[in-house]
Length: 311
Image (cartoon, rainbow, N blue to C red; front, side, top):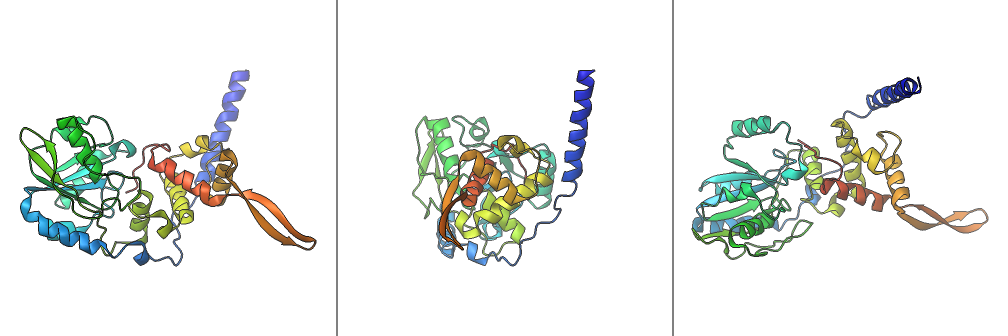
């Protein structure tokens, strides 16, 4: 009888949560934000360097984030560098929900992309990478999708050597087209690492936000507050509620301020601020919403909120 009552209570609670979730936002309000200032102007130089070097390579490897297989790919790559065979590598597959992988491949094929490889280049050994070492390659893509990580993975797999290209957790680590980096002995294969180049004009604010969440744009250029809000909106839309358990929420929420306050309290992220009152100045301890937003975004990027497909 006790077990039956517990089941009924749990079922009613689940029904209430689902009913509340049905009232969550279905459209994200970007307000009056613009995307133009998000993108550094120096990227044109990187594309010019790539055009000058393309005659020395046999194949183009375009790296992109598997969580956004359609959003944000730079059309200038195809227009300017499509004089060599082209392979699209969707990296960070360990962070992406690939349950609809066949549909992704079909849609890419409809857009003329027939050669696609999914991989996770941070693994110490990547068998998917080992199958594709047949060319002298130029590695291209938007910032922070794992271009340098791919080169290092190939070196680990074939040469048993360490890093040949510097990597980092934010965009802009590679500043210019680098010298040739050897990744294989038999046959001898070299790769050219290149700086990330964003499209000069992207499709929409939503595309820009997806790029930002995946780390291709410096966070402070977009704003951690709206990035965290868009992440919450996306997780709820996809019914990915692992953030509830991670941050000890009682149920899914569509209120980013409520979620960030809970994150700040759980992690002890607070700050002291001065307030002017009728009896003088006082110091208050309040939640650090920016620090909480950063933790929320970082957890997504590390896959700690589950595998997600933003497109």
